[in-house]
Image 1: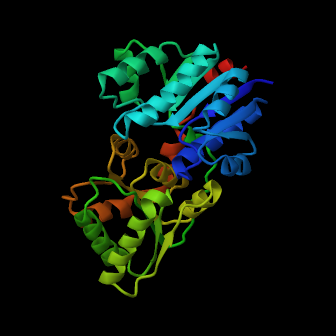
Image 2: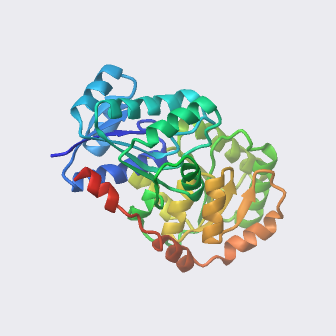
Length: 337
């Protein structure tokens, strides 16, 4: 039985990262691997995924796990970037470095690489990635960056495309998924709330937090704006919930206005009429690829026209787009086996 350690942004109850972990764990179990996940909350990870887990910063246990493992899987997500902080990038690099020192196989799994602004950080990341067994990235910008660094890599789609998602029903519920972000303005929130009140006052509005520590206060603030504009509008703030429950609630929507990449992705997979709020290049790309409307962070668009575009979307076209994406496990399986 192959022993596999998995390193990533796990245990923080972030929907996107936990969804990716679910995909990785399910695949590794199918391949009959013995899985240990590095997590900020090992009890949560053990309970939810049925795997061994050690605390991410318990370095004695982490290093012992790496010594006794066969393969390290690093990812997915955007681990190797220093925009959030150099500290997190250096942590994930340290894990990769230890695995390489112990002569273990290393898989970089469907990651978004960069931006890496520090020359020192660039040097470290380049050196490490060149020595990994298999590198896969989830977007063309990452692939082009690694080509520039002379790192061999494979472009794959997001692994969440391999998750089973039910088809949207006719619920008349409108979902809004927000995340707190430095460029998110009160102007955008107000214009969005005003248009929702104009278009959807007769519907229930569900406001989704995908990571309570970051999103929940913002979601409550947005609910307050809606209630100020129309005290009678029906609203519910939906805190972060387990993966399958979140997918089921998103799939039950008629419309979705979302910031986070994986909220948009699940909406498309379910055939929910979806509008993206463009806080990041990955959001812009999936919106353009799927031909869905986009709201920019400066909120200069005519929101009435955006909502007209949203209404005109065809559910079957959205599902067809999502079904055109197939995650290729071939090289991953070769390393594990």
